[in-house]
Picture (cartoon, helix red, strand yellow):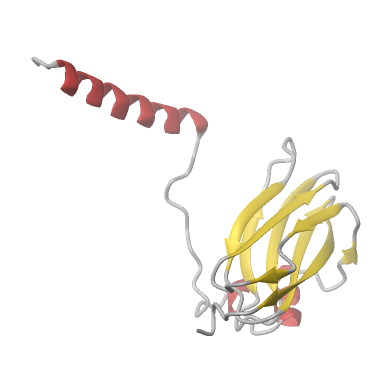
Amino acid sequence: MNYNRREFVETLAIGSGGALLAMTGLNVANAVELPAANGRFAGKNVDEVLNALGAQSASKSADIAIKAPEIASNGSMVSVTVTSNLPGTEYIALIAENNPHPLVAEYYYSKRIQPYVSTRIKMAKTSNVRAVVKAGGKFFYASREVKVTIGGCGG
């Protein structure tokens, strides 16, 4: 092929980006479970979600840090950060207790990394945001109340 400089740079950038994704093992096609499904995301209250996770007897832990605003001016975008300092953390779930479907996110981790989540969630109204962590085969949790002034999930 006969490339001019611009075509060459475009081809190089596209090829390098694809190779980088392949080398890092990044999965760009993630499965999504909808609330209408019969899985964990279908739970209508916290007890149903905890039962589906197998975390009914989760213990409160100071080794889980949740950073979220005390007052969220808009419930459709609430920034939440969770860090687990529990050894062997393999899973983190985020639960917004007063949402129509409380389980809002799940994250799975390799045991070789520091488990950390930084995301935005929707909240229907003021409630506790709970982080449920599985570490060493046991479940732990921490929670923080977030006051919502304008609803997100409910409108």
